[in-house]
Length: 414
Ligand SMILES: Cc1cc2nc3c(=O)[nH]c(=O)nc-3n(C[C@H](O)[C@H](O)[C@H](O)COP(=O)(O)OP(=O)(O)OC[C@H]3O[C@@H](n4cnc5c(N)ncnc54)[C@H](O)[C@@H]3O)c2cc1C
Image (cartoon, rainbow, N blue to C red; front, side, top):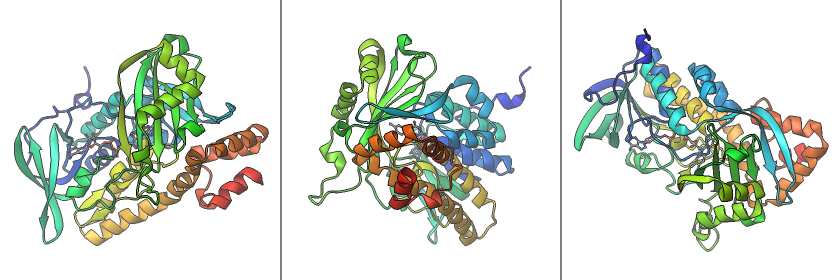
């Protein structure tokens, strides 16, 4: 007989009128927060506007920080049993040369991954309610004391000691909560799934490609399970405006960008020409570098991509979303004083900032693709540089020394 823990409660219970912590958004950030809070014996309500399993537009690439977070959440084996294991990130420059940076990596579609994480939260005791949409915070004397939610066409008020907002890169909920500092996303990207049995075993890395025809971003191909490949192209720094007031996003059509990727990169061309696209290419925003939102207000913490927890250079954010969710859970345990909880959370977030700054600096490569050729040229000649790049990927390299442009230059030329 299966243990009761394997049978989480259904996802549409009657909404309670109160709970200890309301977690809004059941992506990696929200599920990680809900699991950790429920495991401490708190009464946790986790809500999402979608029923699970649900799709999330993503590259599905899992980097070392993500695997570390899976271990902390006790889901590593469950993920590893389904994911495609990968041993290198392959960086391909405009001249077609590449380096393979070693790391612990894998690929699993978000539909499966997020379901694993949400079930782990339920097993820990969190109550999942879907489809439930956060509309606005409930406030008393400027403090958030819960939220107004929409469920089955009706409005409900749920009171909570703390609310964790983990609603991802679409800023509507952040705006309603009064915590959004920048509406425009930091990046936008487009992805599709293509089935191509002939390329299984040939594309075995997380392949990332830079080229002047994709200035401002990059293209990728990641090998997913079942003969599927996640292929996409993304723009970073889309919030930065030129002197004319236009953002990069206004001047770039993502579909053309993706088309350019297929034209300049032979494996992408082969994949699209010989494989079967599953459904359509779909786009989504990204919020990066821990900027664009306030991290908290009394009674509410913002976790995951809503707080900008995605890396600017590479668009990876699943691992850090889970880490910030766990930080939020840890902060809520710090007592009843709002200021103490908020300060504890801010301290944890600030500790992550140097790594985000490093990736922000590295995103120069997206805007000056010739830099990729330079890094690749250096990396191919020097095992020491390759080791250091692997250290950055594995997060064993102290980013503090690297996050300035001169630090990166030193990495390449010393
Ligand atoms: C095209 C693309 C490719 C990417 N590739 C990668 C990659 O390869 N690897 C990687 O690590 N990261 C990647 N990312 C980034 C990654 O998707 C995010 O960092 C990650 O999803 C953030 O997790 P989260 O839990 O903060 O938010 P999300 O995963 O977005 O989850 C937020 C949840 O909140 C719910 N929600 C939103 N608003 C409301 C509301 N009002 N009421 C109730 N529920 C609500 C949503 O339904 C959703 O389930 C990519 C992103 C994009 C767009």
